[in-house]
Length: 186
Image 1 (tube, helix red, strand yellow):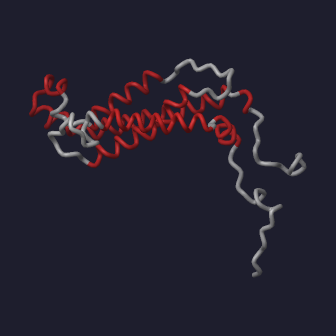
Image 2 (cartoon, rainbow, N blue to C red):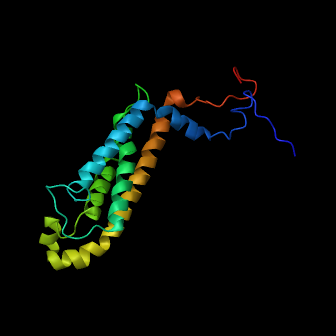
Image 3 (cartoon, rainbow, N blue to C red):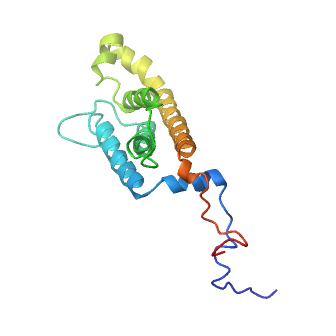
């Protein structure tokens, strides 16, 4: 079998094209979106990591050791929250109107992530409600489930917000970055 040469005219034509929905979404995710997403992800990681002492600091001390699920929940929450915040702050087009759908879910997921990654006996509300032994024997065992629920809600809300972004971007409806045979330039 002879090797086939790939000339400049073949580059791009042999690629697998993305579905139309993905191409329209990519058209709405510009540099501003990613800049805000990265900034929001870093801010989320700091806001969740410093008071829960996942990031060592002189202000907060963790009284129970960090569990692997704490770190996984913390990182995933930060990674999902960045683009989610960007869907609220960066419009797909200047005419795009954000009605704020999903803010309650986002807020609840953020609170759940904070509770899931925090030290169970460092949380004064949990200790006041359950006592120290209740915090360790009742609340601590449900923290991984709380973290999983938080990450799931963040992921579903992000997917929903991105779908809304595509639907509301009328300018992106006809966007097709993959040249077709017979089209101008293709």
